[in-house]
Image 1 (spheres, rainbow, N blue to C red):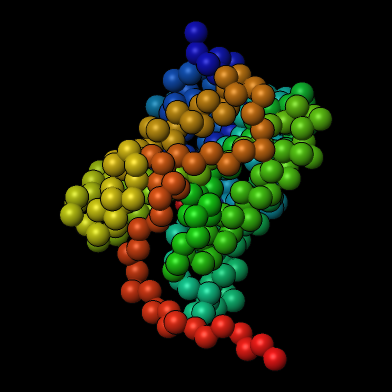
Image 2: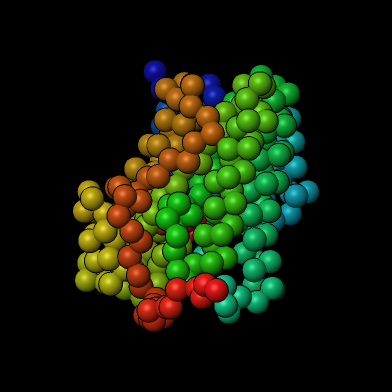
Length: 278
Ligand code: NAP
């Protein structure tokens, strides 16, 4: 018997990385799936393994998110679990940020998460409740430097997840955020990290970013997609039936220490004089 036997689950951002592994894990535990993202060829490959249906959805377009919720309701008459694992990288500093760039990142990482919470939350509220899971980031719990657009949006979604938990609670809709720190997926596949399949990236151990996370993480290892998927499974299942409104770091305890630095050196802070008093 699986933890999600017969549950109807929508996983957005399932064409790669954490979302792909969450979809696989849910299927292993008996869920019926709709997987969604923009790349339909990837989704079809996933559905061959997990069963279920693939729906193309760009989360930055509210009409497409509404259509995704409608497709699930038409297929099942209800939605029990909805995960938003869509994401794009958004590095940069506030001092350099251009409006077009900020809007592009926020379209996915901020507005898209609101659209998803509203459409899925309303559908769940009308059909008996469920569990909504936003994949956010531990870089929105600690304060990063050089990740302004990304982490600012994620912090907004961490807060909005709590507001949604308040709003939807009486309808038995639970809302939680799953906040990884650094997970080797395609999102992090730059110099020294090579994708090996849809969910994994091989890392050179001596990369500064990898060493930085190892040094600043109490468990002294890098979090995996499997560990993220297991927490999503917990949040989706009745094991967490009294848990709502939480942001759960999945980071080996990294939030207890600090984010490693991998950008340009921090600007030196000169000793400042105290404010003048008359
Ligand atoms: P990934 O392998 O690059 O996956 C990103 C997913 O987002 C893909 O399925 C992609 O699919 C989808 N996506 C991107 N833009 C989209 C859009 N406009 N509409 C719908 N789907 C869209 O990266 P990942 O590491 O699994 O990231 C998953 C989530 O974890 C993201 O929210 C990310 O911010 C968060 N996270 C990751 C890390 C990490 O270190 N990896 C750490 C903290 C948080 P298509 O391109 O096919 O649309």
